[in-house]
Image (cartoon, rainbow, N blue to C red):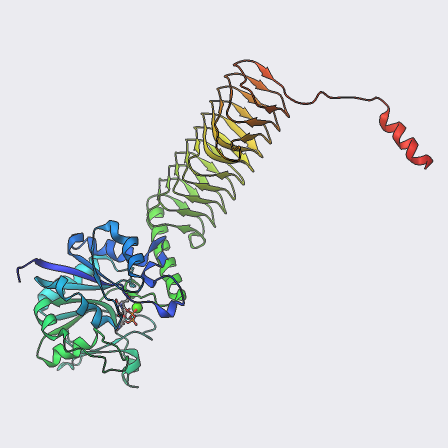
Length: 472
Ligand code: UD1
Ligand code: CA
């Protein structure tokens, strides 16, 4: 077999995730707004090129493949999920020709590239056939335990491992072992391939498990080593929803800490939901219970008040978003004021110093610099020029039941309250629309359009009516 390179990474991601009790495959469950598997691939990509990463897929394979295919990694199919050892058996062809492989678990998402590097360095220094990344979490229950070799010197923990014992196979004495298997390993490919075929399901798990290889290799005279990760949280797995939520909170707190270190104030960060890729400039303040999702970018000196949810938006400097706003796939210019209770739907472009007030909804709408829509409006498929004022209750009627049409309002225009603008329609620069109008024809620049029933007044009518009612 021709040599492919020094190192490949295999990520095991074929399992069903029975303990999650979910229709969705485990590795596609999300933390920090991204699937577990995507986190693991991102870490692996810092170690080797995507072409040297192989993901073992099986349960709902096509869904998993589609979710991460864009990363450029390779895939190996494990049609029947007979255990983690069987997963690596299925990757045999892919790994042949590499001198070493790193095995990562698709459900251990917080692993840092630095820690993988440490494992890799230690593996090489130890010249081991198998090197296990271990940890000492507060509660080791459920994890495979590391049985280190007996030391001749009681004070020294030997680097060598005798076996990994799965939870189901633990003796009473072994229950006390605090060091766990992270499910992350380095292997020299030659001894791995030489012994991989000897694994069987003859164990307490009744599965072909990779952990059995530690004992097997050791018994065959190969060196099996272990290195403990400094922080257990990094290697914790997500087998249940409760565990997923802990990992999610950990990751989000890391994001919040990164932003705070860069000068962003986040009050009560534990109540905020901030995705990993969000960027915020210094001196911006985020109030409690705010969600910032996807690729949201927020400038400096902004204030995002409580209960606001912002997804895939770009906000310039000095923007104020008051309480309980929903902003999606939109941009907001410097100094603009949004909310409270405003809804910016996709493709809204709010200009510099513009105001979008309470109960205003925008969609595919461009508001020019200094334009204002302060109360109770719907502005969809529309352009509003600079400094124009949209009165309370103005509605752009953009939809005729079949097609969407555009409303264009020029600069310095004034749309009186409770007007409806039936698109397609244009209101020219500096034009006025009288309150309560239903505008169906273009309004030329600097003109006034009023379109409402003339007012009728009957003096004394009410008095006469009351008198009539009294008589009855
Ligand atoms: C595994 C280890 C355990 C370790 C723990 C760390 C085994 C037998 N046990 O247990 O020692 O402490 O991880 O988190 O390996 N998978 C496949 N194909 C299969 C089965 C599993 O690809 O046939 C994948 C899963 O999708 C998952 C990973 O392998 O991403 C680990 O499998 P899982 O069932 O979660 O193992 P644990 O019980 O957590
Ligand atoms: Ca697991």
